[in-house]
Structure formats: structure tokens, C-alpha cells
Length: 427
Image (cartoon, rainbow, N blue to C red):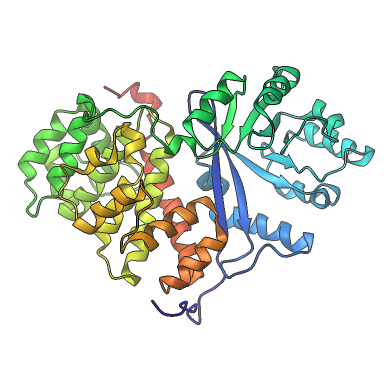
């Protein structure tokens, strides 16, 4: 597809950050570990610590911690230099500073850790191993992270038993499969980091739960060549929580409408077909994922918006790429095979083929776009660079699109969070 697109003359360097969720045993997100790239060109973080620290702080300021972590805790790597030069003081209290394995547990570092605790920072010991030289720092740790790919299972269980207490949580790192998740829970870990939750735990052979079926019917209805508003109104009215969410969304400051929206029909008239279809897609994803890990739904929205934003520079319709991103995690959300999820949806054949092939690692013409979406989410900077060149997309554009998708998804999901004054709106 040619050489990599160069940034436009006015195109500035754009912050690059990736995040990986940290979850509880019931798959609730408690925080995100953030990893940074200096800029959206093919460069790593600058070697001098002042520039590296400034790049991290600038990224957090530009995008915002609340957007990056969706209101949860931020876990940020902290090198020996960052500790000794006190660059952590530029970060807000409440951030979890991950002390790397190369940091010596000397008197100076111990004194710094004491000061961090007094200033309300939290401390994690990253990649902790049996016989770790950072043992003197354990008394200050709020989290101890153990790489289950490096530490044998029996030693993992022993470490958890030895170090876990009411002041310190033991987190399992690099939990890549549902089986590893189950084993880590059995060994006593209470926190888990990895992409195991992107996988389906128990696939239902050919069944979508009845309470989820209405949302798939909505997706099917809005995918028809001619949208039937009477059918859509009827489906929405059957789901009271969806009615409530639609009206709450339209009356929120997010849209800034000049008059209140009081009915479903009024909502349709105010929104128009394009915006209504867009809203139903997002709302259906949120509703279907309400019992699952919150990051599954958030990630599906980020993926959808990212694909939509890069579509104008590619030879594919925005609607098709949006749906590809939105549905890419729907098998994990619904715990159903992706074939069952998409079989009743009148998707573009290439989009449907890519969703099916992604699970078997087969390739289609959409694979470079799908792979770019996944690589950018995971912070695989080398793969992002390679695919950006293949798709003739500047890395500045890719970074800006992803950052915009993060903001957009956070803004949308925030509008859907329960309103305490309204009580429980779920059904």
C-alpha cells in the first residue's frame, strides 16, 4: 500500500499511551497500568530521565488521567532515577508508582518510600520474584505483582500465602488465558493483569440469552437497508432500562439540546436516523456487557470509534469498520461463539469474514486494519509502526485517532453510568 504517510506540515507530535486493566477475581476493573511512547514517530522514550518524565507528565495532562483510566487508579512504572530525582511529585497523589526490579532497596530508596506513603501515593513492587532484593520495601507496598509466566505455580501460591495481608494485595501479571486466570485465583491471587478476559470462558453452543436477544434484534433492525422506525421504537419500549438511558443521554449536558426530550418518538425526531443508529449500536454494546468486565465494553467502543476515525484514509466504509471494532469483543461479552453473534446480522461480507477469521488467526483484506486496532490498544509500538506503514497512515494520525477514541468512549460511558438520584435503573 505504499510508503508511510508523512505528517502534514502542521501535524504535531501526539502523545502515545497504552493501558492494560488490572482486575479483581470477579473481573471488576480497579486500575490500569499505563505504558508510554515519547511521540508518534518511531522513537522510544528519550534516554534522559528529565525528558522521559516530562513526556509522561505531558501525556497525562493532554489526555487526562480520568480519560485514560476511566476513573480508576493509574499504575505507572517508576525507575530508580525517577524516584531519586523525585519526578513522581509531578503526579497526583493516589497514583500507584510501580517500583521496577532494578531499583535497589537501599536507605535512600527506603526514605523515599516512607515519604511517598506520607504523601498518599501508593506503591507497587513490579515483577517480584522469590528471594527478591527489594524485600526491605515490602512493608511499604500496597501491591506486589508476580509474573506467573516466570514464577512456578507452587512458588506463586507460597508467595501469596507469605505476603498477602489486609494492607497489601498480590497481583498476578501476564494472565493470558482463562485457565491461567482460574489457576491464579486458586493460588490465592486477588488481582489479575492480562488479556484473559478477552477470551470466552464458557461458550454456549448456539444460544444467546433471552435478555440479550433484544439487543441483537436491535442491531439487526438498524442494519437493514431501510430502517423501520416503528420496529425500532417497539423494541426499545420493550426494554425499560434502554428507554431510560436513551432519554437520559439526550437530556444530558453532553448534547446540550435546547429543549428536554420527553418521549421515544420525540427522541427519534431530534436525533435523526444516522445519530439514532449510532446510539443504538453503542447502547446495545453497553447493555449486553453490563454483567461483564467493564473494560470489555469500553474497549469495544474505543475500537469502534478508532476504526471509524481512520476509515476516511482507507478504502472501506466508516459504518463497516465501526461495526468491526464494536463486535470484535462481542463473543467474550455474550459468552457465545462469534459465528452465533454475527450470523443474524446483515453485515458487509468482508467485515463478517474478518470477525470470524480473527478468532482463527486467518487473514482477510481487513486484517491489517483489525491488527492495527489490536496492536494500538495493547501498546505494541513495533507492530503499530509496521502496520501504519502498510496502511499508509502516519503514526501521528494513528495516535491522535486513538486518543480521540479514548476521550469519546469515556464521555459516552460516563453519560450511561447510574444516576444516584434515580436509584437502580437496571432490569
